[in-house]
Length: 284
Ligand code: 7PJ
Image (cartoon, rainbow, N blue to C red; front, top):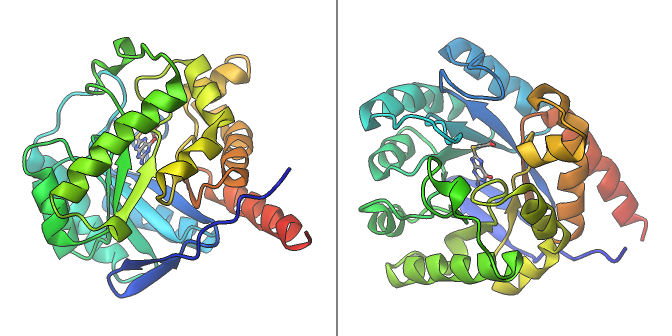
């Protein structure tokens, strides 16, 4: 299969830089008590930090800290509580040599996290919360704009598409336009098609099959497939703990089509797979 060459782009992340011409593994650090795939095991601060250190040792160059569960049916977390979960962990992570992204939709949370040393805003709601666009422009940090419809509580009923890939691209373009208009710099924008968000299993597979089409939007692309339900379904009904290899396979498929970053729970397996993939690419 033909390699999609990644654009020669350096993402400025505070005093750190990410060379997006090579693929990166973003390790997932849940700091929620109700996280569905790790059961909140990393909820206490020390466990969270130990897990982050291990992910960095295993090859993660970005740590994605999430204090609000976005699983379907999750209850809304008060902003103060989210800040209480995220900020102390970010303060410690900032001492390590890794880029820190924050999985939040709340302007107040990203402001507090950036103050504590975070670099990237990862927003599954694509800057749609009140004040989000202005905050992203003002903070002048990289933002990951993800495709979703509705809210995690309502999204499952919002999956009517004429053509899932074309519709996702069109709706992402609208969110990008809003961001640009609000003063977010183009060089700070990354995109993510939002696997599992307002898409059924077949739509997720189709979107991954046609992932290369997203390159036409002209922004670096993150793929986040780790342990998602449709991976479990493709495996004939595997639970979250048994989706690691399936997730690696799906992520490699997206890298082959131009993704520059993959968001993973199982970092060692993913980073090893990326290394082998790169070695094969280099031989071409
Ligand atoms: C995503 C995310 C995703 C981005 C979550 C889960 C649910 N951020 N945060 N993309 N998913 N950018 O990990 O399954 O797909 S939370």
